[in-house]
Length: 252
Ligand SMILES: Nc1ncnc2c1ncn2[C@@H]1O[C@H](COP(=O)(O)OP(=O)(O)OP(=O)(O)O)[C@@H](O)[C@H]1O
Ligand SMILES: [Mg+2]
Image (cartoon, rainbow, N blue to C red; front, side, top):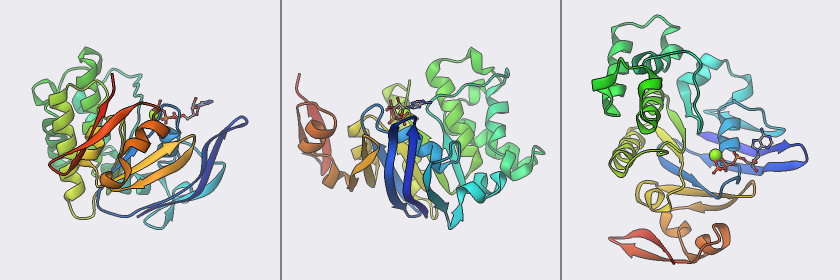
């Protein structure tokens, strides 16, 4: 379980994460949605200890993330950030192999190599595994970073806008992959998404953030509605149901 207890984060005078408390139990797929600037990435950074909160705390399986050794945390929790830059010139295989570091301290064995190859194949990059990252398209690079998180094989996998730059085929295959991960015993996938229809289709639970606060939390059928469109996203539109799924249609 990830327990987020009254977490606050400020930049200067602005509270960008405002007293957020959430419990994310093991299992399933959790979507986080909300307008630009709502605090989604900041919250993910605090959970994964890339950033320190000003107050409150985050526990992962009872361990305070700020007090847990990095390697131990990395075996439990992985994070793919919204922006990914690597200074070094790396191939896809090199990058994905970093995901195994918490398990092997940089000394990969046969099992690590197989897991790296499997993660690369999962995202459909096996034909170009030895290409350098700067020789890839935006969507291919994005998939390489997802593969690194897959190779880490953590119980809680956090992804910040993993569908950026992906065409509809690759977006759907990636969401199906996340769905399969979330269906494995003990595995939990948390994904920041902008596409409400994708969130409604694949997530068991959707958390809505606005102005640093959690303003909605529940099953897609409870969260995706006209009020979400008008009050949180400030668009006019209808929410219809197709085969029991909520589908958003915005007015032109
Ligand atoms: N380093 C920083 N210094 C000052 N303000 C920042 C900094 N990083 C983020 N912010 C501000 O914090 C707020 C929350 O940013 P955050 O990146 O968490 O939003 P988000 O919900 O992930 O948005 P998006 O959907 O655009 O990715 C924004 O108003 C942003 O301008
Ligand atoms: Mg963000």
